[in-house]
Amino acid sequence: MNSNYKKHFLDAMAQNGFTPAEEKDISYGVQLTLSDGENDWKVRLFENAAGEHTIDTSGKMPERLMQAIGDFIVKSSDPLLSPPLIGSDEAGKGDWIGPLTVCALYADEDMYRRLAAAGVKDSKKLSGKRIEELKNAITSICPYYSVICLMPEAFNRLYAKHGNINTLLAAAHGEAIRSVYRKSGCAEVLIDRFSDESLMESELKGTGLSLHQHFRAEANFAVAAASILARYAYISRLNALSGKYGLTLVPGAGDAADAAAAAFAAEYGKERLGEIVKLNYKNTLKVK
Image (tube, rainbow, N blue to C red):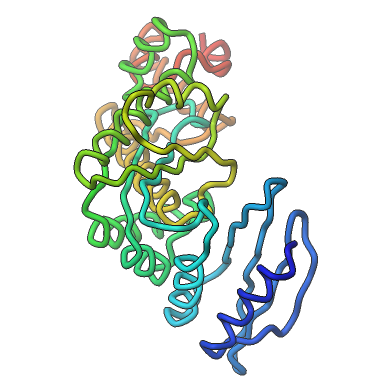
């Protein structure tokens, strides 16, 4: 971990009344315990091989601390973290039942601070209830966003044509990003890297957009906010499918998903599985 980056972070926190109570080395970074004299909160600073930094927080933090972290990130020169930018992320890729969803979202410096204060983080670290709560906060803070949803039947048609899920993802990300670009005029784009970089570069070629692709990009507040809206869209559509067919359909690709799909097949027939699942997943063979 770059000692100067850590020092600048601690200096910024100290100016807001939060001092280090404990420090522990972790993989690719350091975990800091910050204290205001009464309560402690853990913050993790990460550094990748390219020297780029990300910040991760755990647990509910006071708004004052989240604002301090948000202000530090805004002032950072790290392109992974500095707004204004468009962040884009997806949900449903690891879920056999239900759609594939993508969201792109624009955030400027003020929106960034407000997202930080609201407690926005990678959707994979949040409960369904918290995702729903943050969805309302995010859409009130960030008016420029676009959600693309490929329901199972549409996904299966496109997959049969292209034969590659990453090709579908790139097209969905591209559509969402271009939509937000038209609304916001922001040309800086950060996306969580999901495949070979050339795929998204080709998708956005000729648009004039400056594309950054990074692993763990959800550490950026705009990407994290996009991940929450994408996950909310996935869960909403999954629930709608449950209501439509009178079954409890579940996320994931484990035993519970297998059982839910088997119940669907028993009720409606195996030939209709494509109405609720992504047929290219190995789980399909278990039911068929």
